[in-house]
Length: 325
Image (cartoon, rainbow, N blue to C red; front, side, top):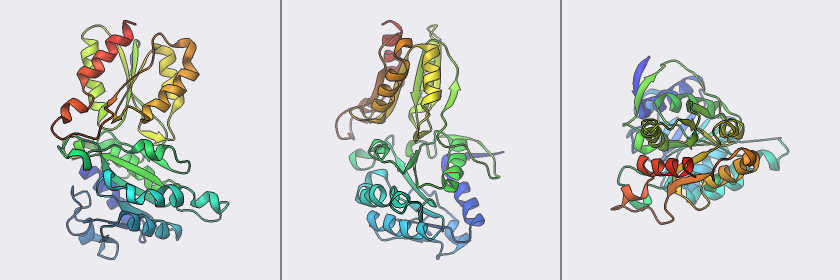
């Protein structure tokens, strides 16, 4: 297997798709010759031509309107929103058109060939307009799938599965890990099942649940906890919509405790949905209240980024609170 960072893995998944489908198109702001602001699409315009990999005007609503139309005709539409913070002008197209296309036609037509890639989250000193985690806004919308990888291997396999899925998929890429996360990735094609969480580390005392860049944080906390004799089960949710309630519930029945960590603000973050559901499903097995270690209910700060983002020390404090309840 080749050693890749997350950008190389994403580029590989896109390359395979473009070679596989002669009608597949990649489009977005600066994705052409420039290769995107993070270079995720580098070399693809030269390989497949300007008619298949091309820049769009600076209009997110237009990008998704075009994407819906292209996907409706059966072509794999690989749309990029340059930063997840900029996705809101396209919100109407995504939640009122992409998500409802199949439903409103009684399955006569759909946009299942649509994949929307966008970098999300902090860690690059991007301030309030380049650091947000908006996954919970879209998790309220039936008809979409939402996926977040944690490393290069996951990124390639999940992106290929998202592209092949017959539903529109939002693929949130943790930008902090684009170059920081490296690992062995098969150069050939492979897919990872959507809607299925992964138990990354088995444990018996407390369940730690996260996704994307927060996985690195909870793994650090689990290591600190093990040094104090606390056994943590670490789970990567991977798919936010649909989410794998069964795997989480099975773990919580075993450990009796659950801590959820995400970068987005705590109020109405997706962790709230998980906490409510697991409390309902596992109430008689819980040894302590479900805890959330999340971002703050403020706009994303520039100077105080480290204070804002949940870190291993905050997760470790929650572990102690849960175990000592």
